[in-house]
Image (cartoon, rainbow over all chains, first blue to last red; front, side):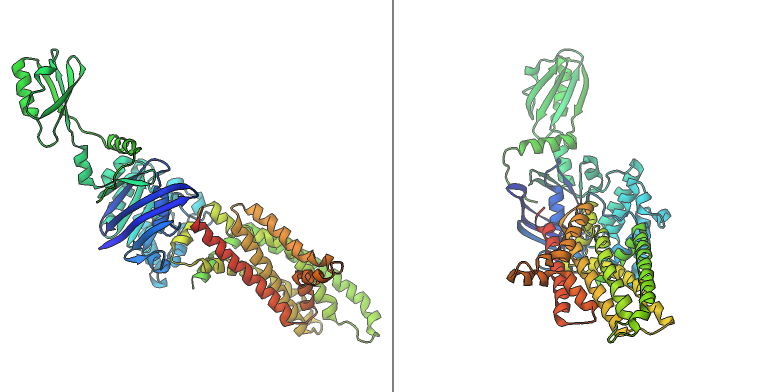
Length: 314
Length: 251
């Protein structure tokens, strides 16, 4: 069941293109991590999906309903936490959540129940009667999240949900997101890469308004898998004698006793390499597969996409 | 009705701030003082006008001036009440809560408007209590009082609609307040050129809020004056909804 279907979404601010031809779909039970440097177009895309910003071109379907043609019906299925939580400082948490519930057409009889449930899920049970203005930034953020999930919408969109939270709260919110992800489709944007690895099932990298990567977390992990080995020996390595080991593509010398060996992704030459090094008597100290961190992939992709890239399809 | 939900929150927020209470208190104090002064003046004049033919009654002498004064004073106060309506939500980025909810722009504008009109009605109610207190000791032309009340409600409705629109134009409440006050004052005095401007003078006179207000205060409920206020309110509400929609179209 496709809950979000975005097709060829474009947005211009004057002459400046903020979002350029972005298309993707999201199904129930998926948590999509939206990554990108500042000003990449993450927030603009999210604002368009939630009907806060009109797209210059393109189509957005929420649960099969076009948000431009039938905004009221489509918005019923939406919960949105913007970058700055839209909370009224002069209201108490309970008053505010009741108001948000009423706006989202939660029936009066269920209002208290869904409010209490949202409060419990976001760890707000203790602060129900406190003024939002007197709460810390982290708690205000939680009130914002509670507001987005209160009416249990099919699609939840969170713009940097863990900003301003302490590490313990971050872990709680991640658990909450994973928990919510079972029944809803979730999009969350973030700068924090491990967050995507921990809580998302899919990842998209957006750069300069373009979607430069759209992959599952497994796919991304595969990308992160090494295609190089790090070799350290006691004596100096003669590189020429390693290049003909089956599977080895190239060898870079880092210093006399260390080198990096690049190989074809499919088969690791580690076994043969170890044998060779031992026979040659270099004195094998270390042979480790290298893992690319998510940061490296991210930087790699965003740097490469300076030059126009081809469309990436799911 | 979503508008009522929004209006309810608007009213509650108003009464949570000391602003609304202090405005209600100050207005009541000043108008009460004016009313008492007028009452004193009336009891002085009573003997003298008693012999006159077609003498003005107590309602003409007391109620119409009271509502006239209320109109001017509330012109000063309305910008303070309407300035925050939309500009503050835009500034605090809380508008996206409304934009994400299944609520149309018209409902948002209507909700905000009803909220502020609700507050205005409380104020009118408190002002009307003053002439009503005279019933304890004498008679009152209730028809004329009703006309005056209607006039004040329509006037405040007009003030609020204009204030709402100017609040929708900006993200700075103070800017909204200054422009609202300027626009209201201009609409109040726009007929000063009336007699000098000849043909155009008629248009200026028609535009003046004061003219329509005064003719209603005389107890003359004419369709032309009612239409003026209703058109005035409707125009600015429609403009506000359009302006709010612009937030979505471009930023």
